[in-house]
Length: 363
Length: 86
View (cartoon, helix red, strand yellow):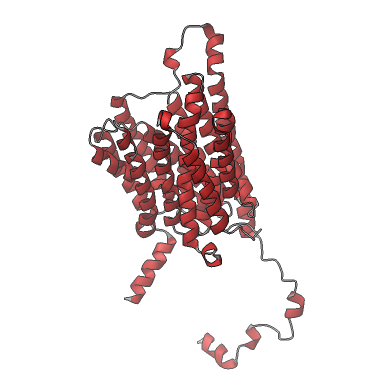
């Protein structure tokens, strides 16, 4: 057991699975408990917005606290809050929503710190960690919309399993000195503020564009899960590819390639799904670029990216974009996102240059 | 899920303001969180810069460690010194 606790791959597996569970449970609560209990459509919409603001917007603050206090088991606290929210359930829908949102924020920060701090400057780990959330959201929405057949028993059992796994397999940090993450995904000539701002704009713009992608093919509930699966695949592979071919090359190319697929895949599921996978590849890249400039603050770096996601989500609650305008808007926004990423990331990281020099020497 | 503004009945500016109160508050909260994050980033950046520029703290055993031998340079053998000069 001790060997498993100190195994980096086991920790990643536990965090990734728990990420799926946390997002699954939150969306089960939103659609299965909060939505049916809401007095009106307006109240439901406001509740969903409140959830997003708390779950995503508080992460920079929670991350900053977690960075300064490494011994706090922030992920386990998050899952405990989530479990409390699920147990409250229909008895107090607003309290349940707030507890789940706070739990979500804490867990994401804990998992995000692990994915940034326990990797040797590679984006693959953070890509794998963030990937499972998209699948959890899709399946949680599907499960929460079961109507009369919906029960909180499954989410509660899953949340308890996640909490137990974190307690058993994730060691609590014994260190109190600041983190020192070692990433090389941001252009050295740019200041921390510039890279953070460029990445935040890239993420926010991409987040809004992601919500207005026309998907007429997503008619049945079963097909509605596929975008989540494609996003998960894109996020996981984006990190691996960025480590191999470079952050800028993979990030900019995948974004630009996704435009025609998203725009013209309205009625073709396979084309649209491929576009979604490419579109989501930049997620670990922007995260690692921000972390490159904040080496002692992986929690804050992770929180900045989720706050940017929230900024891109908020307009969706107020504005509806027609399908014809959406196509032009997606093309323009993705191009802007790619331009920001281009400006923030290096053509070739110094680590890759070192590897190339070593290869040349060995020849 | 969009807020159903499109179905808003004509009820005067006060009714519209009340209708918008919660979304406006939430948007203001997001704006506040953005400002807070900017402050946190600036603070973290300052600390990072200070940590990178700070000289290494002297070891508490420095006094005990320093002499008896003068310095690393003085230990170089004459042969090594000749080699370096060449």
